[in-house]
Image 1 (cartoon, rainbow, N blue to C red):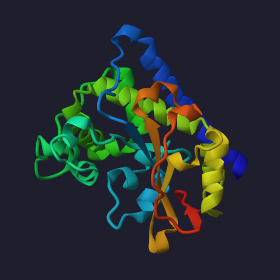
Image 2: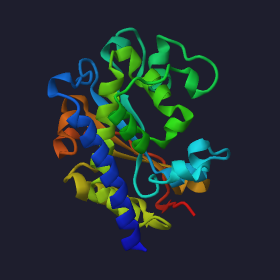
Image 3: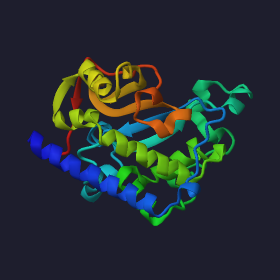
Image 4: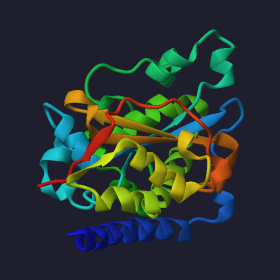
Length: 263
Protein backbone atom coordinates (compact mmCIF):
# COMPACT_ATOMS: atom_id res chain seq x y z
CA UNK A 1 0.00 0.00 0.00
CA UNK A 2 2.83 2.41 0.81
CA UNK A 3 4.46 1.81 -2.56
CA UNK A 4 1.16 2.41 -4.32
CA UNK A 5 0.55 5.61 -2.34
CA UNK A 6 4.05 6.86 -3.12
CA UNK A 7 3.61 6.13 -6.83
CA UNK A 8 0.21 7.85 -6.99
CA UNK A 9 1.49 10.87 -5.09
CA UNK A 10 4.52 11.04 -7.36
CA UNK A 11 2.21 11.08 -10.37
CA UNK A 12 0.30 14.03 -8.98
CA UNK A 13 3.47 15.97 -8.15
CA UNK A 14 4.79 15.21 -11.62
CA UNK A 15 1.61 16.57 -13.17
CA UNK A 16 1.74 19.76 -11.13
CA UNK A 17 5.44 20.22 -11.91
CA UNK A 18 4.75 19.76 -15.61
CA UNK A 19 1.99 22.38 -15.47
CA UNK A 20 4.25 24.84 -13.66
CA UNK A 21 7.06 24.26 -16.15
CA UNK A 22 4.57 24.76 -18.97
CA UNK A 23 3.54 28.09 -17.50
CA UNK A 24 7.16 29.17 -17.07
CA UNK A 25 7.96 28.19 -20.63
CA UNK A 26 5.40 30.69 -21.91
CA UNK A 27 6.58 33.53 -19.66
CA UNK A 28 9.74 35.59 -19.95
CA UNK A 29 11.68 36.32 -16.76
CA UNK A 30 11.08 40.05 -17.19
CA UNK A 31 7.31 39.49 -17.28
CA UNK A 32 7.10 37.56 -14.01
CA UNK A 33 5.81 40.00 -11.36
CA UNK A 34 7.59 40.08 -8.01
CA UNK A 35 5.54 39.74 -4.88
CA UNK A 36 5.24 42.70 -2.54
CA UNK A 37 7.92 42.69 0.15
CA UNK A 38 7.97 46.33 1.30
CA UNK A 39 6.18 46.47 4.62
CA UNK A 40 5.45 42.71 4.67
CA UNK A 41 7.73 40.62 6.86
CA UNK A 42 6.66 37.13 5.89
CA UNK A 43 4.09 35.04 4.08
CA UNK A 44 2.22 32.04 5.45
CA UNK A 45 1.79 29.23 2.95
CA UNK A 46 -1.39 27.43 4.02
CA UNK A 47 -1.65 23.91 2.61
CA UNK A 48 -4.67 21.70 3.14
CA UNK A 49 -4.51 17.95 3.62
CA UNK A 50 -7.61 17.48 1.49
CA UNK A 51 -9.00 14.18 2.87
CA UNK A 52 -8.71 15.50 6.42
CA UNK A 53 -10.31 18.82 5.54
CA UNK A 54 -13.21 17.09 3.82
CA UNK A 55 -13.76 14.69 6.72
CA UNK A 56 -13.79 17.56 9.19
CA UNK A 57 -16.63 19.41 7.45
CA UNK A 58 -20.20 18.81 8.55
CA UNK A 59 -21.33 20.12 5.15
CA UNK A 60 -18.51 19.25 2.73
CA UNK A 61 -18.12 21.68 -0.20
CA UNK A 62 -18.23 20.66 -3.84
CA UNK A 63 -14.51 19.84 -4.05
CA UNK A 64 -15.07 17.20 -1.36
CA UNK A 65 -18.22 15.66 -2.84
CA UNK A 66 -17.27 15.23 -6.49
CA UNK A 67 -14.82 12.38 -7.25
CA UNK A 68 -13.33 14.20 -10.24
CA UNK A 69 -12.34 17.11 -8.00
CA UNK A 70 -10.95 14.84 -5.30
CA UNK A 71 -8.80 12.92 -7.77
CA UNK A 72 -5.23 14.20 -7.72
CA UNK A 73 -5.64 15.73 -4.27
CA UNK A 74 -5.38 12.36 -2.57
CA UNK A 75 -1.64 12.04 -2.17
CA UNK A 76 -0.32 15.54 -1.61
CA UNK A 77 -1.06 18.91 -0.08
CA UNK A 78 -3.28 21.38 -1.90
CA UNK A 79 -3.33 25.14 -1.76
CA UNK A 80 -5.49 26.99 0.74
CA UNK A 81 -3.74 30.34 0.45
CA UNK A 82 -0.61 32.48 0.60
CA UNK A 83 -1.10 35.03 3.36
CA UNK A 84 1.03 38.15 3.85
CA UNK A 85 1.79 39.29 7.38
CA UNK A 86 0.47 42.64 8.62
CA UNK A 87 1.66 45.28 6.11
CA UNK A 88 3.40 48.32 7.58
CA UNK A 89 0.88 50.76 6.13
CA UNK A 90 -2.01 48.98 7.85
CA UNK A 91 -0.06 48.83 11.11
CA UNK A 92 0.54 52.59 10.83
CA UNK A 93 -3.24 53.06 10.77
CA UNK A 94 -3.64 51.16 14.04
CA UNK A 95 -4.65 47.79 12.57
CA UNK A 96 -3.28 44.99 14.76
CA UNK A 97 -2.12 41.59 13.62
CA UNK A 98 -5.25 39.81 14.83
CA UNK A 99 -7.58 42.12 12.92
CA UNK A 100 -5.48 41.91 9.74
CA UNK A 101 -5.49 38.13 10.00
CA UNK A 102 -9.27 38.11 10.37
CA UNK A 103 -10.22 40.70 7.73
CA UNK A 104 -7.26 41.30 5.44
CA UNK A 105 -7.94 43.45 2.41
CA UNK A 106 -11.64 43.51 3.28
CA UNK A 107 -10.66 46.28 5.69
CA UNK A 108 -10.45 48.53 2.63
CA UNK A 109 -12.96 46.88 0.32
CA UNK A 110 -15.65 45.13 2.35
CA UNK A 111 -16.49 41.62 1.23
CA UNK A 112 -19.86 41.33 -0.55
CA UNK A 113 -22.35 39.12 1.21
CA UNK A 114 -22.83 35.63 -0.13
CA UNK A 115 -20.52 32.95 -1.45
CA UNK A 116 -16.80 33.19 -2.15
CA UNK A 117 -17.71 33.72 -5.81
CA UNK A 118 -18.95 37.22 -4.97
CA UNK A 119 -15.69 38.28 -3.34
CA UNK A 120 -13.89 38.96 -6.62
CA UNK A 121 -14.46 38.71 -10.37
CA UNK A 122 -13.22 35.56 -12.16
CA UNK A 123 -9.43 35.37 -12.22
CA UNK A 124 -7.71 36.42 -15.43
CA UNK A 125 -4.77 34.00 -15.73
CA UNK A 126 -2.77 32.54 -18.62
CA UNK A 127 -4.19 29.17 -19.68
CA UNK A 128 -1.20 27.17 -18.46
CA UNK A 129 -1.21 28.85 -15.05
CA UNK A 130 -4.97 28.36 -14.88
CA UNK A 131 -4.46 24.61 -15.35
CA UNK A 132 -1.67 24.51 -12.77
CA UNK A 133 -3.84 26.34 -10.25
CA UNK A 134 -6.76 23.98 -10.88
CA UNK A 135 -4.46 21.06 -10.02
CA UNK A 136 -3.03 22.77 -6.94
CA UNK A 137 -6.29 24.19 -5.55
CA UNK A 138 -9.39 21.97 -5.74
CA UNK A 139 -11.21 24.65 -3.73
CA UNK A 140 -11.46 26.71 -6.89
CA UNK A 141 -14.65 24.76 -7.45
CA UNK A 142 -16.05 26.88 -4.61
CA UNK A 143 -14.31 30.07 -5.82
CA UNK A 144 -11.61 29.76 -3.15
CA UNK A 145 -9.01 31.32 -5.44
CA UNK A 146 -11.11 34.42 -6.00
CA UNK A 147 -11.73 34.78 -2.26
CA UNK A 148 -8.08 34.30 -1.34
CA UNK A 149 -6.93 36.91 -3.82
CA UNK A 150 -9.55 39.42 -2.68
CA UNK A 151 -8.68 38.97 1.00
CA UNK A 152 -4.92 38.57 0.90
CA UNK A 153 -3.57 40.22 -2.23
CA UNK A 154 -5.81 42.76 -3.96
CA UNK A 155 -5.06 45.67 -1.61
CA UNK A 156 -1.30 45.09 -1.86
CA UNK A 157 -1.30 45.58 -5.62
CA UNK A 158 -0.18 42.01 -6.19
CA UNK A 159 -1.16 40.87 -9.66
CA UNK A 160 -3.30 37.78 -9.96
CA UNK A 161 -0.68 36.14 -12.18
CA UNK A 162 2.26 36.88 -9.92
CA UNK A 163 0.46 35.91 -6.73
CA UNK A 164 -0.81 32.56 -7.95
CA UNK A 165 2.31 31.65 -9.93
CA UNK A 166 4.31 32.02 -6.72
CA UNK A 167 1.77 30.08 -4.68
CA UNK A 168 1.66 27.19 -7.16
CA UNK A 169 5.46 26.97 -7.26
CA UNK A 170 5.60 26.85 -3.45
CA UNK A 171 3.01 24.05 -3.34
CA UNK A 172 5.02 22.06 -5.85
CA UNK A 173 8.19 22.49 -3.78
CA UNK A 174 6.49 21.19 -0.63
CA UNK A 175 4.92 18.23 -2.42
CA UNK A 176 8.31 17.29 -3.85
CA UNK A 177 9.81 17.15 -0.35
CA UNK A 178 10.51 14.26 2.01
CA UNK A 179 8.04 15.85 4.43
CA UNK A 180 5.16 15.35 1.98
CA UNK A 181 6.41 11.81 1.39
CA UNK A 182 6.20 11.12 5.12
CA UNK A 183 2.63 12.41 5.33
CA UNK A 184 1.50 10.53 2.21
CA UNK A 185 3.04 7.25 3.33
CA UNK A 186 1.28 7.47 6.70
CA UNK A 187 -2.18 8.32 5.42
CA UNK A 188 -4.86 6.06 6.76
CA UNK A 189 -3.04 5.79 10.09
CA UNK A 190 -1.80 7.80 13.04
CA UNK A 191 1.56 9.43 13.74
CA UNK A 192 2.97 11.29 16.69
CA UNK A 193 2.75 15.08 16.40
CA UNK A 194 6.47 15.32 17.09
CA UNK A 195 7.15 12.83 14.30
CA UNK A 196 5.50 15.22 11.84
CA UNK A 197 7.52 18.13 13.16
CA UNK A 198 10.76 16.15 13.01
CA UNK A 199 9.97 15.01 9.46
CA UNK A 200 9.56 18.64 8.45
CA UNK A 201 12.89 19.62 10.01
CA UNK A 202 14.64 16.65 8.41
CA UNK A 203 13.29 17.70 5.01
CA UNK A 204 13.93 21.45 5.20
CA UNK A 205 16.95 21.79 7.46
CA UNK A 206 18.07 21.96 11.05
CA UNK A 207 16.17 24.51 13.13
CA UNK A 208 13.28 24.91 10.65
CA UNK A 209 10.73 23.12 12.84
CA UNK A 210 9.43 26.41 14.27
CA UNK A 211 8.36 27.48 10.77
CA UNK A 212 5.70 24.74 10.77
CA UNK A 213 2.23 25.11 12.26
CA UNK A 214 -0.03 22.06 12.30
CA UNK A 215 -3.80 22.51 12.20
CA UNK A 216 -6.11 19.70 13.28
CA UNK A 217 -9.86 19.29 13.41
CA UNK A 218 -12.36 16.76 14.65
CA UNK A 219 -12.85 15.51 18.16
CA UNK A 220 -9.84 16.19 20.34
CA UNK A 221 -8.01 17.96 17.50
CA UNK A 222 -6.64 14.65 16.25
CA UNK A 223 -7.37 14.93 12.51
CA UNK A 224 -4.77 16.64 10.32
CA UNK A 225 -6.47 19.26 8.16
CA UNK A 226 -3.74 21.74 7.26
CA UNK A 227 -0.10 22.72 7.60
CA UNK A 228 1.10 26.33 7.56
CA UNK A 229 4.66 27.27 6.67
CA UNK A 230 6.09 30.74 7.43
CA UNK A 231 8.41 32.10 4.73
CA UNK A 232 10.34 35.38 4.87
CA UNK A 233 8.93 37.81 2.31
CA UNK A 234 12.39 38.78 1.12
CA UNK A 235 13.32 35.13 0.57
CA UNK A 236 10.30 33.61 -1.16
CA UNK A 237 12.46 32.90 -4.20
CA UNK A 238 14.87 30.92 -2.00
CA UNK A 239 12.25 28.48 -0.70
CA UNK A 240 12.68 25.69 0.38
CA UNK A 241 16.15 26.66 1.61
CA UNK A 242 16.34 26.73 5.41
CA UNK A 243 17.24 30.43 5.49
CA UNK A 244 13.92 31.28 3.82
CA UNK A 245 11.88 29.98 6.77
CA UNK A 246 10.88 31.94 9.87
CA UNK A 247 9.33 30.89 13.17
CA UNK A 248 5.65 31.08 14.08
CA UNK A 249 3.28 29.86 16.78
CA UNK A 250 2.31 26.23 17.21
CA UNK A 251 -1.13 25.00 16.19
CA UNK A 252 -3.67 22.99 18.16
CA UNK A 253 -3.13 19.31 17.53
CA UNK A 254 -3.21 16.31 19.83
CA UNK A 255 -0.04 14.38 20.63
CA UNK A 256 -1.15 11.73 18.13
CA UNK A 257 -2.53 12.82 14.79
CA UNK A 258 -4.63 10.87 12.31
CA UNK A 259 -3.87 11.37 8.61
CA UNK A 260 -7.07 10.71 6.69
CA UNK A 261 -7.41 9.21 3.25
CA UNK A 262 -10.32 9.15 0.83
CA UNK A 263 -12.23 5.83 0.89
